Length: 327
Image (cartoon, rainbow, N blue to C red; front, side, top):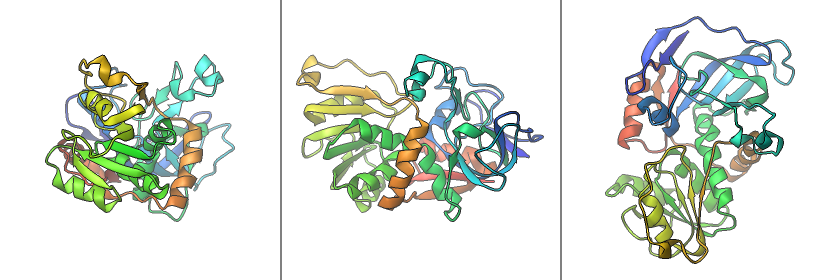
């Protein structure tokens, strides 16, 4: 199989012809139909996330068809379409797993980070952690739902019943989340990279009541601000934008350091929260909800061998929506 391999952080991926693995106990082999390119992949490739398993095949928004099942697999069958998300496996024994918070597992495996992912023609996944997917949908538009969609939904849940929501960073996650939030009747304000007129126009087309640069103050106080851009300086700005009792949710796995800010910006029972990974229950909730709301990913497709170009476009902010690799 052809796979795009990270041999050392900070270097381009290299195309390798590798022998497909045979699934072990509890595992599945899949033929990859599509794999989204997430900002987390960029953090892995660029070395922002420490200690990846090397050499590594990145990619954790995987849509594929089961080609073989290892011993003990009962819940999926060959030929079935499934999704493989970021959470590849958990220990099932730590206090977090036992308490229903598997996203905080003390000994997890993460797809495309500590185990090989989907920037390849084939991949291996644990059967208990794959997500059944609709047979008729376009695999390229399904792929971004498996992380960008799920993380956006988890971040929105942390905002509670907030009606006026600011989205800082308008990439893959925000462009999906805005569709759900507007369907729910919420007011969404989008804050993009300064000067990104195209991104702001995109946000308005998807239902934003206002769109501007992240260096601007939104025209009305926010009930919640959801930060998807990996820029720590946005946290104090978002605190100043939310009303008393409002919430700032940091939704990325990596962010630059948050600068100091006056206590007055936090006072008034404002809160800062972070989102860590995902759970299988998130998928059970979000995917049917997204289908009812008509959430649709806007994707740019790249051949598998053009994975470095997709990462470059994501890094430079040249994408509208999400990038997806097609083997």
